[in-house]
Length: 417
Length: 85
Image (cartoon, rainbow over all chains, first blue to last red; front, side):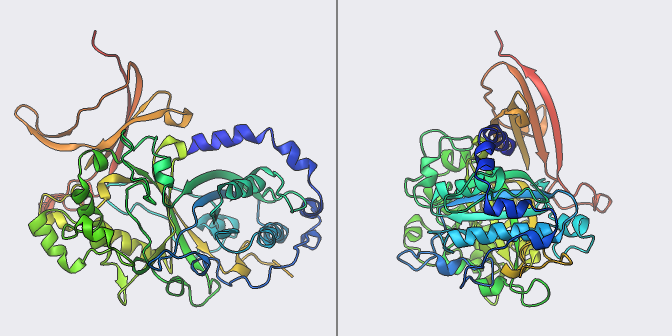
């Protein structure tokens, strides 16, 4: 299904490489130099960019309640190392990233991005211990493919054509207006996969004619996500300070978890009514009228979880997940988005957190696997939040270094001056 | 939990389409006993791939079953189907 997207991309790649090659001037020439690091021209850094790659929130617009509004379009690009990593390859990647930063302002009106490195980059590429653990299945009802990519690039902005053209430039060498030369990442990197998506009012309704969504256009017209509710409210997100690694070689960095979930909303929309969906998304004690009045917090009081289990026989996603807290605050920042990759309704669940353990804690809370012991009408999936409706198909973990360290972190001999 | 995904041929990696993807219901019947099932409508004759994701039993366990079958299994099969005449 994701491969379908890849195939389409490959099919369209043949026609554009010629144009990309023809436009190859300054940057392309600089990158093609094989004599070593000294030949790669980095170009100047754009001034004033945050040290943290994950510093996105300050650039986002706010809704009337003060919640940050996620960028509307996303791309995830996955690459593997092609040969042993070299300082020249590190400079080549850094040159491309700096070119993007010079072209686009840091924000949803320009371009936000993050560069993450997987366990194999460290273990196979550098032959050092990985600072990030390998992904794993995290419930009794999922058996995801565990991705093994070396590099993940996450791009986001409010302009779909812009993320598409950045993808085309990096993957296929198509020219970007205003940038001399090819930005194609072929220097020691091999493109493996692209995932696409969107989040924001109206977008899911406009994409609902896909597998996983029953007929009859059930997705509400203004809903930002396929399931019909908002996410990412201010008080349901960790702060960027809280997810930042405080010290060590990845200080000012964070960790990124990237999973692909298929949404199976036939019974979500076909068999549940609005109160039934609200009970599962938030808590059985919450009513649809209350949901309409939510401002910065999705209610679902975990103090009422025992009552939800024993009296209602159904528990809410917000309610179970709200048990994963540190000093009363959530542990992760959701940067997820919907997708129709492969013609199926899905969710690319991207989250950043200080350590992958924080993600696992959150996922375990959401699983609520203990509820069945108290009430057998709640199984790990049935009447258990939204567990029934999402199937994790793929998962991966990456580390996001600080901006200064983002290109081939820990590689000896790198120089970006 | 017992989830079933069915792809119409060709295989999903060759552009096959998911025709059914849902959890199965726990059921009791007089002659089959406890089982999982659901009614599935297939779009037409052809070869199908079936992928079952079978979770471990969620139940209190006798000591002799502790540690046995603790993680999910996947079973993949393919079958031909043509509608009855």
